Length: 386
Image 1: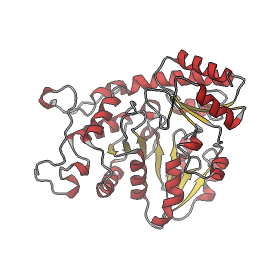
Image 2: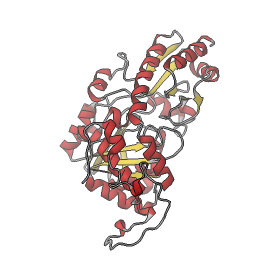
Image 3: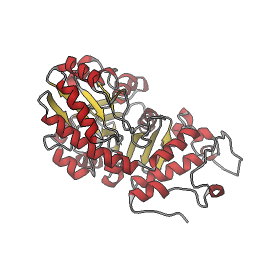
């Protein structure tokens, strides 16, 4: 009989684990097999085969991920972009129209602006801070609404309650990229979202050693997305599934420490005379701070900021810091620093970045689990050297 756990810390360890344990193994083994014996499955999508996302390693992850967000079902994928693109191509068809938040991860933005047309799918961007303006973008063929929990890289927080209410009123499917928050800070299904997506490369795995994705939500939609994924082939391999499973066990410990550390670092940066702006929902100065406090259990380990000296000062700061690693990606145990204009949002035109408020001098920081004091001291010496 399956066990269910009320508290997320316990669910991370025990939810979805095989009963009885496989040959008594406390840690889930790696099933490094592409093929499994046929046992009478009647549907192509149920045949036991690695590409069909139903190995023992996949099944455990699906159960655990769904439980973490209080959702009906879940599916792991080969990457976060595989999760996003497969979901969009499942829920939208030629002739359909999507409403999407105007500031998105660069890969998602590129897929909408550069690839949607080839599928015959239309889109419009909406100001997620202005629900009153959404009606004007609605079309008879609008089918879905896509947002991010906290936007990459400006840490904007949309009116997520209004998103769900608007979608319900107009019979739209709601999709949210929950990567920045993780299930520790926000669980979309509990707020009425149909689908959430993650780059598991980030917080869920947390150790910067795999690429993976996940789709979590309504069972009927997840089944459709699985069938599309089976055809497109964006399957997570068994060893990456094992590492994701292992990494998730410490998610609560890591994210809560990163929440606390990022807030202290954001407060330090906001006070420093060389810094012109800090984007972090945990700061009282953030335009959506009150909303973020209502929605989230924590404000994540992500922040971004700008310096008074512009792009040159930002590049000098990145050279001066000693602890943060200059690299793209985020959510790992090590602190990473980058300029989105050269990494996550390099695919956007300079005009698009300027329109969205992503300057060439914007710095994005993913706070790791090093001592907070060490990170602050490092930034202090780097800023003072400018």
